[in-house]
Length: 342
Length: 281
Image 1 (spheres, chains in turn brown, red):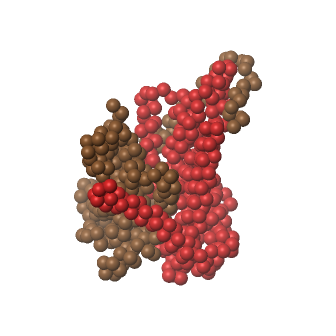
Image 2 (tube, one colour; image 1 turned 90 degrees about the vertical axis):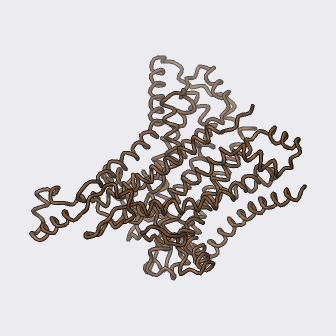
Image 3 (spheres, helix red, strand yellow; image 1 turned 60 degrees about the vertical axis):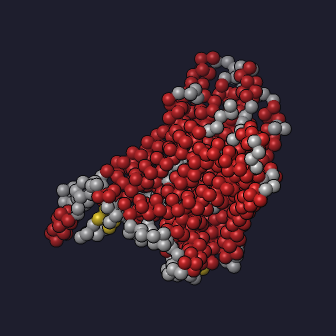
């Protein structure tokens, strides 16, 4: 590459002071750009928090007290009376938010604001997905890293990476038209839009992450370990299972947790594939509605500034905290456990 | 080879083979489902008769425009951040914080970006439900990918490129501008395209910030709503009043979406391969 090999010299080499100033300004601008990632993360947390906390306490944001004089003048006697009753009946939101599984935020009579059912649904779908994806993913990673000839690996890896490129809405579509009906037929159900369907699809989506990071972890295990094990008379399978995988365990665990973080936050796939019944799920064949699906379904219908609107930000906050913790832990595991050559 | 080894390794190979087959099976299934509808008219015409006929042109155009907005709002900041991290930063609290933020941002669920977009762009900044609000939201979503990919590309430029320029009296920025960036450009472009291909397929972040089910006219300004391919597929497969009848159109829309993402990914892969062979030539 010509441009790269010949070192080009800037034309304007004079003006020391202004050049230094320019350098300073450029460096400051670049530092600001780098710092923007911190602002964005804090901004996301801030927007969720500021909007989310407004859901708590009594009243639902729509009450006589916070109407302006103009707005009050526009309402009829009957509407004002209705609004007064409404304010009285809206229950307060407190600890129930996390510990109740009744979610019915639009009802004016029996309004309930508990997200426990969605948290449990999210966890069931996610854990089931990981239970499917982890053994398959680690197995494939082990084969690619430990057994496969280099040429096969070079060809197969990009094909498997294509799985990661399929948009989640397409995966959800496959759940509706293919996987769901298949599950319904195999298990003799009325329809296949349930937790299992979501889990199977999320497993497929988590696989590329799990495979790619586990493969790195397995390849990072020093060759000495393998040779020492073989020299002691172990065969190659024993060496893989008893030496290589345990040595790469922390990287593999981090891979699985990262896959789990993805699965918790996945929206369109579960929204389309799990049926979205709001209830505490009893089995993997129940229709479930996850945290992400709830936001996606309801945010379009709520008036801005209402309690329901703020509640959805609170749901987002729960989701944010869950993924944040999972990602942070996987990050720590990955950092602490990277095998060092001795 | 012992029997145990044979059984074990055969199982692993079978799992890998099955997964590769699954990829091809899924793609074939989608494409063959939409083949009967796919045509030039499907790409170039608007939907007709309540989306039961006609094409997907407005959704295709919307996704194209949205992707451009996403690029404009995230690529300059992302590259600048990467330049700082690779060329200037000295390890310290600030840099640790930045790196921690980038890693965590890439794990934030896309629907949470959507909530953020609604809270900040649509309401607080009063941009309304618009293609601008959606573009900015997706721009933030792509930011970590752009930064990470650009960092990789910059790190791959040999030290001698910088030293050469610095030895001739160039300042640090001049060395970056004239020697480092041109050499890193193909790698950066690869990462940018991969990030954009992911953004183009996203639905949750645009759901409440700007996308519309059906619009009588094409968007003409930043404040307009728009149609988009992923959302179009969502509507056709879950919300349409005659889901069975529009199923072939849904398959074809999925095919176009996959095709778009595949073209972007292949372009990125090609650029990366070419850049690699040049850097080592």
